[in-house]
Length: 180
Image (tube, rainbow, N blue to C red; front, side, top):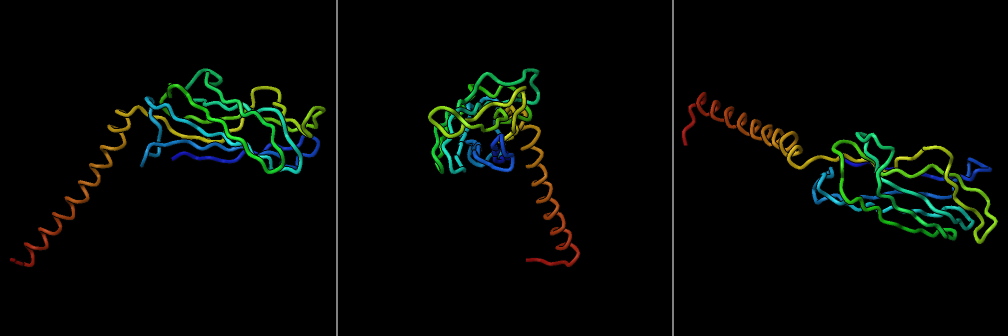
């Protein structure tokens, strides 16, 4: 089951002040809790100004796979900000293919908010280094692997439970000598 959390970007001069909220939402197939390697999902990245000042800049979001040797995937979404207090903006992150099986996450670069000298009161600035926040985590499977290793054993357990109930019912009928 995917897990999501909200990232809060804080003011650099006062770390107790949250100014921007960023969250992600995925588009799972109906009645599924995982993504598949043959899918091209769309993740909606939403940034909301939760301060009393205007905020400019941009947030970079990408999909990363824990099984990958690379630092990050090629597909990115640039969430461009130009938000007045209370406003939100949404961009779509659309990876062409889910290239690895296993655990993956939508991540955004860690950032702080500093006073700006241009058209906005404050601006988002990426923190130095390769630090990121996970805002949406999920599992990716090959469809056949998922069917063989997860669905078929589950169905076998259901069948075993039903057969057990039937065996107990037949035993009770034989012991009591009940005849219809």
